[in-house]
Image 1 (cartoon, rainbow, N blue to C red):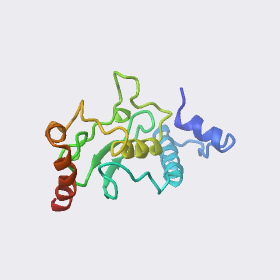
Image 2 (image 1 turned 45 degrees about the vertical axis):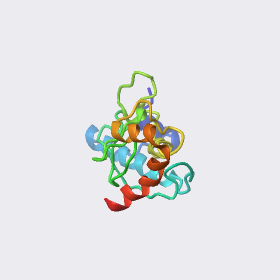
Image 3 (image 1 turned 90 degrees about the vertical axis):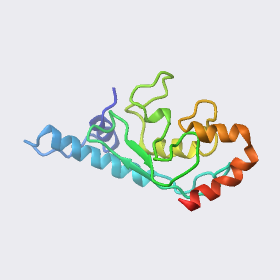
Length: 160
């Protein structure tokens, strides 16, 4: 199993940077912080711009737990949005954010924040799911009237 320590050890040639006598929890936080810093530096700024939500700007809060990368980060959408996989309260349905997933696509220690960002982006393009929604009202609205759903997206986001 891949751990933070072994991933960083491999990346910087075997140096762990651990001071003798440092506690394991301090060491884990330090490795977590180093890994997060590295992952954030690798994130790409230009994401695809297509689909119903093109040109939209959405803010997300990503809470990275102490046990990262063994457990997934907690993610919430801060922008109020009319979306079948995001509730009006910001809860998100994205399988890779689940610690345990039936379909096998849940969180794994090999996943990174970049995977989370790409997964969130996919919710606005190819993973937009009207068949198994978290926000049932938004999905039913789409099924009833696709044209009105499309025109109401901007109104919903800009009025809230």
